[in-house]
Image (cartoon, rainbow, N blue to C red; front, side, top):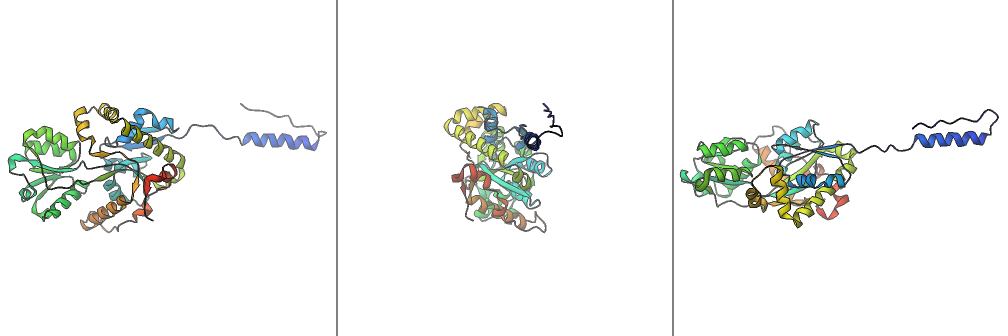
Length: 333
């Protein structure tokens, strides 16, 4: 609504003029009560806290309007982030490292889960029961991804090199089909594709025993300039995720039901794999060490031609999480 003032005539007092002008200036500077901008977030199905917070209305409760989009992989979510199609993205820390090598403006805001869901398994009918049995065999893995990184670690710890096996570069969903058909002998992949492969092979599925629990993180990432100019929204998103974390810890069955319902998953699969995930919003020091190791591996493998290892402490933007949950940040500066 517009308000009109009639200014005093030439015979009015000077004070009346000053009061009228002051009132008009004050009205012109009343802050606009507009709704907050929509925050578009891309997440994989394994970004559990994202979907739990969305289902429960935790984002709305914190006053942030979130549009949550599903991506099939962290790599595709990261590409959408760099292209400006989303504001924040959820991916593995390995995908973040790989993208940071080429796009130094990316910033890690928090880890929202860590998991040991990547495993090396094989077809029993190929005579494979141990790592030594893989020599000369065809192993399905996604090149340049965390699967190849972990496979190299497992082989090296058992005294072998990648050259001792034949690597078959496959997308994660294709690994399930190819090992079921028998075109590959073994595979290194993550959930839900381990579970799907197990279902496809039945008694012919064998999990190789000589492998440690290789943990990796699901991280929340944004472009640094966006996070700098959207501190309020970023903190609200983190607060909503912390609420989802508390809910999942106190009500695991209900949290599992949310994920199973949202992605039309077999509840038995969700229950079986739930213990592989630690749903926690944090920034631990060991995450920095892990990313440095992964970046060095990418350089040594020639996957990042002419690119140096980034300064990961500078690539972590801890201030938003520190402001809402200081105990969740454990970094040595």
